[in-house]
Image 1: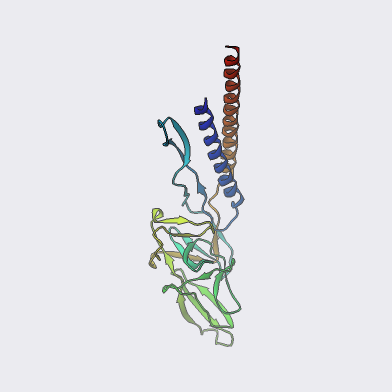
Image 2: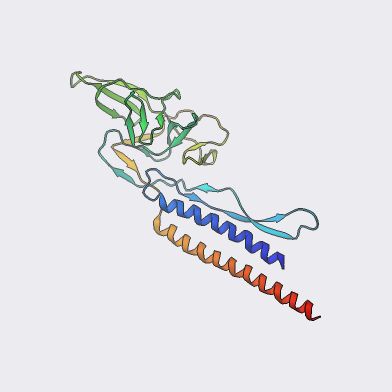
Length: 248
């Protein structure tokens, strides 16, 4: 009897995990540069005292959908989207180097080039980009090089400054952290790549398909209800067996 109950219980737990993951995807359907999370579970043999007669559902190798999101033109000089594969390098809150497709940038009061969430954007050397102030004009070229003109300079003045660090790691070499940023699995910094191209005045939308996520949520809810019914049937069978023993 406990075979059925154990399998149904572990299956229900994985369904709840999948529901929370899909719900998070749906909540980020409008988040710039968001990569949808994927879930996966498999049957796992339970080992312990006695014979290995129990099997349970276990989360296995969760990943992300790395398909590109739609490019949305904004016309804002500090908005950049990554064309094709590649990532922007930023300094995470914990001080580590991390990668994102979130290209909504700003310049802080100290001249730091940051994402709109306050993360410092890194240059090819892995250092935060500091811009001279006050700026009158700033452009980001497709190779990530920053062109800036200070206030008071001639209209034909200005100079190229640092280059935004762009990287091109293989998808199986990076993983998403709890902060939504990607990092190399080995903890090392990815070398800069000149192959990555940027689109100025544009942002990449989320690659979440809201209709597909809603469909998955409905399917997962029905599976969860099925697992609960199985647990209920296991309880009814257990009561029937106990009654038979009392009669005997």
